[in-house]
Image 1 (cartoon, helix red, strand yellow):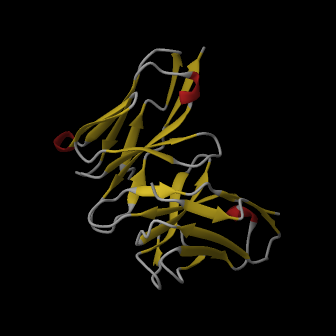
Image 2 (image 1 turned 90 degrees about the vertical axis):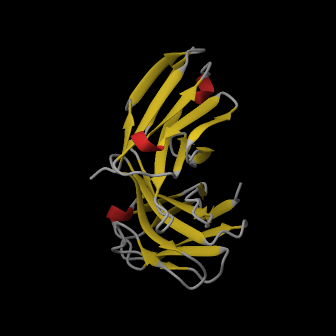
Image 3 (image 1 turned 90 degrees about the horizontal axis):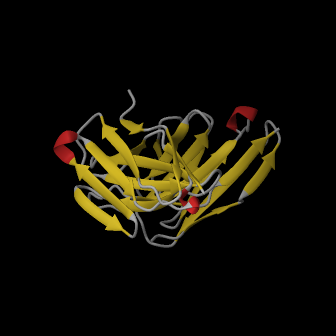
Length: 109
Length: 113
């Protein structure tokens, strides 16, 4: 069973538009991490957000534990934001994390 | 943020040959992980470790061995490489204390001919 579901699978925006990425979990978790990856590149940790709302620059993540979901909001998108955004959840039992399939974002000029 | 490095960055190997991928982290994290990433499969966990001397099987351990000789170093070993092991391999390190947060290396692109 896929433990982490991400939506949408792909998203195309015009530069300066906002993006909302969603992540849902099959179990309750308070360990949520968002990553960014360019094709063939390193996974860059964007935000670790176990609960509530956290912000980093133009990125805002909101995690609602009781609803088993997390979102990532990208404001004023830029062409350089293009890439894949991955959501991951962890379970305290062994500090493993489980990844979703990602959202591919394309920002056009 | 933890500094995680991998070597080599690119590797071409022959079928049946032995391949060793190395990972080093400098932030004193207890946990280290090896993943592979393939189109259509996403990231899959191969082996992981809770500290020096420990290795645990992940979801796809067959054909791979791991070694954790020290806190800083974690190796992935392919004793008899096969073309199906052509992939991009990522190493990660993570903190403990109930915080399942991981930091990734740049990846190694392995091609087995």
